[in-house]
Amino acid sequence: QVHLVESGGGLVQPGGSLTLSCAASGSIFRINTMGWYRQAPGKERELVADITSGGSPNYVDSVKGRFTISRDNAKNTVYLQMNSLNAEDTAVYYCNVRLVTWRLSKIESWGQGTLVSVSS
Image (tube, rainbow, N blue to C red; front, side):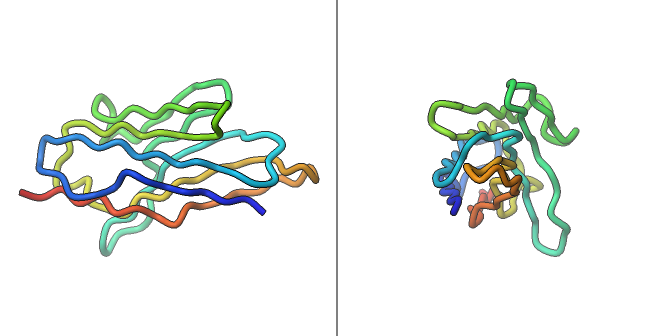
C-alpha cells in the first residue's frame, strides 16, 4: 500500500559525509512527519531526526550541528545530510513516515534500512 525506498548508505571514513534519501510512494493522501532512526549493534533503535510537514526539524543531541534533515514534499522524499561522521554513527538507518492514506487511515511506515559504516 505504501512503499519506502531508501538509498545512500555505505562505508565512509571518520570525518566524512553521506546523504541518505527515502522516497515514499503508494496510497498517500498526506504525509505528516518524516524521520530517520538508527540502530547500532547491541543497542535499541533511536530517533536521529525528524521533520514536520511544515518543515520544522528535530534532532537527537548527539547529531546536532552535524546532521541536517530536509524534505521535498513534491517528491514525497526525506533526506538526511550527515557530516563529520564518527564511529558512533555506525548503524542501520531506517526511514520512518507517518501519513494518511487515500482511505483516510493514519499509518506509520518503515523503510528497509540502510547501513552506514564509519571506519578508517
